[in-house]
Image 1 (cartoon, helix red, strand yellow):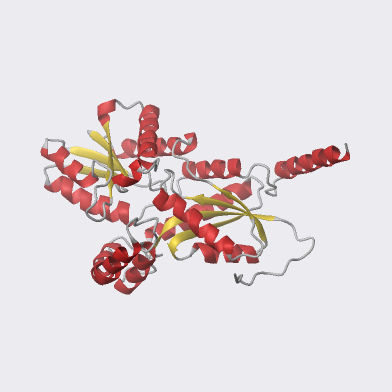
Image 2 (spheres, rainbow, N blue to C red; image 1 turned 135 degrees about the vertical axis):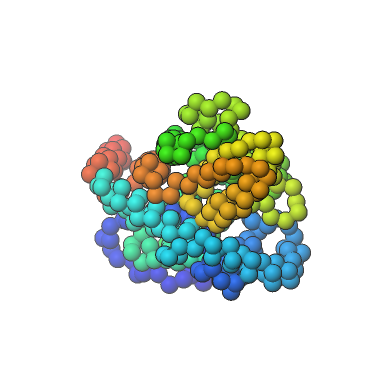
Length: 362
């Protein structure tokens, strides 16, 4: 096996701890060529599409990559920001805000954003951190609910990178935080502010990203964790059982996915006489194509076209201070025992080392 070049080891170099926030990914531009590159990487991941490789390769390269990039590019163009892709912009802002939050508390950490697909790629970010002296790494996927197609795929990529590293850093990985109290509180605060500004609609619809139903039967906890997030949010807000619905969006292909599907549910609600609806996407912590275009545009049109009158999209947490605080708490819990540069963590680490030394002397 060949290893990638890396900085020469320097004796006495202090250990540095890095935190990498990983989101799904995004094309570099809202153009067909950029979408073709992005979709080729994304849809080639066996975690994302679990059908025989040869069959899928023929479908992907023979049909999908010939027809879908142009259509997807037009959708991306409708939500593209001056600074770039919304997902990339918000993920960068989250990492910067988390860095400031932790630094204000005295922690000296390297906090960086990365994408599982597209740029900045996870391997390139890890290479850059290694060049900065990283010896300890916390990987924090920005997926509160665990799914093999998302969270596990991040783990795969980190391990692929580690296989080519001569010096593998100490590694920790955040698997899920669907029931984290601070995350739930941030969602609740966001909804309450939305209601204070816009009023409360007749029904709250929580739309999570869909996955094939088959994944549930194979042992993936995603479906259950989505419903637990919804239950905890409803409890915190004091909502009656009939005041909220859980749905799933972004279905791809002909297989049966988790139900009920978001857009058909909204059409049905409007057809039955519901006039106003609030729609929130708790599984997305940063606004992106799936929230801004699929929900904010397509789902809105479906609801209004079916007889609804008032469709209110609740933005993702993005760089909300409550969410950044939740991220900080999550980060520090997973960094326990590592020296983060803060006076208390350094003292704690020295105390542990002293205790170990006493034990060795005995």
